[in-house]
Image (cartoon, rainbow over all chains, first blue to last red; front, side, top):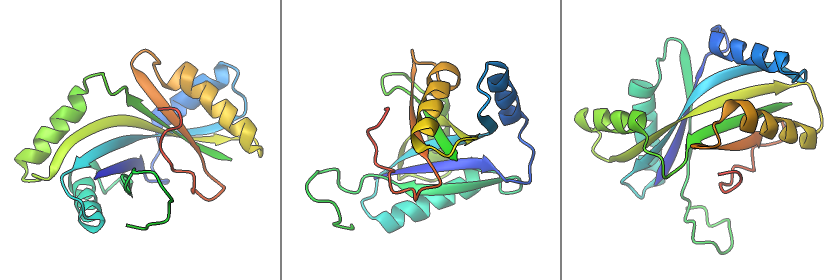
Length: 92
Length: 92
């Protein structure tokens, strides 16, 4: 099972990298880009078939290793809900 | 309207940073983590209310500025309209 972890700076924390990208885009003529925030993105390949286990593990790894909880927040999404095609909605 | 852009190394490109994170997690006892791939994540705040415009703009910015198309692929997701479209397979 795969899990995606998104780590972003908390909204109250200034993001100089994102700010610089935003300014660069403005100077390139992308006037409709009002703001940019940059974050990190991780794809974890987990040796478990239980969605609950995978989510718990991903959250544990994210909070203890991938994110700095003082200034960053994270979000976890699970992938691999049986990519066997057929009708969606099996919910496993 | 907000757009999220995910930039990841193409599957054929070795990801030393992700590999190192994976090894670190193994050494910390997270044995069920088989592999880690790291990518970048951007949140763009766009001054447009049209989903089509926002997606076109985000794709343009992603392909020309945020990602290196030689070694990276990107995926765009629009927010502000129920994140139901998290299905993989778009621009990967």
